[in-house]
Amino acid sequence: MVFKENLTSKCLQKESLKILNKLKKKKILEIGCGDGNISNFLIKNQNKNSHSFYLSDISKKAVDSAKKKIKNKKVTFKVGGWLDPWLNQKYKFDIIISDVSSINDTVANLSPWYKGVVCDSGENGLQNIINIIDKLDYISKKGSIFILPFISLCNTQKLDNLLTKKFKVKYSEKIIWPLPPFFEKNLKLMNKLKNKNNIFFTKNFNFYTAYTRVAICKIN
Image (cartoon, rainbow, N blue to C red; front, top):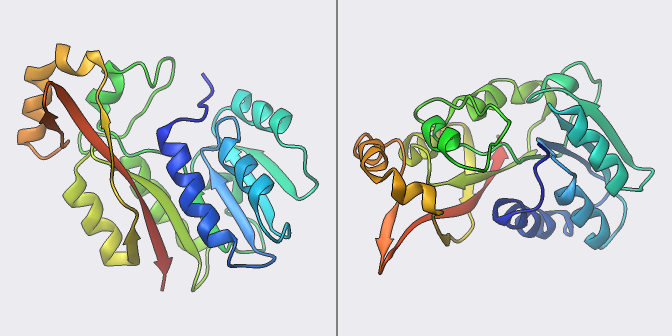
């Protein structure tokens, strides 16, 4: 399975472009790149056309798909999970964009989103982002910006605490979206997860909804 453009990636595209267009000649890393839609959008829409892009994904199939989509000399591709492909580089990145979503493992396994893919994010949904943050210092510097999705299908309070303790954080506005049918079919289980603060959702009229926003984290 290769992750393609979706609501989360569109949110990341929008917020990342706002930052890129204020800067010149920066090194941009995207991890969990899927088919490369985020970096491809940024390359096509950047004002100054001067940034260098670095993309990786744990799936070789995804990286091959991104290579076909993006035709630009200032792009480097690698295969590997989280930050591992970049830990031995001599250079540091100015902007790190993560499209590795923090989603409760039970929700991910029941959903069609991760068909054929293991999420391994844990019951609070944060294990993957913790793995990334733990090694972020190796590939970033003071003033670097870490951009990631903040989805309410995880322990949002713990994720906010995790980010605000380490970074100076700004959030984009929340985008509310309806949960697919699998969610209501497993509503008893979902309510248990909500009661444990491992996910958050609401009911609006006859729809169950979650939200997505983007966390923009400045590294001190």
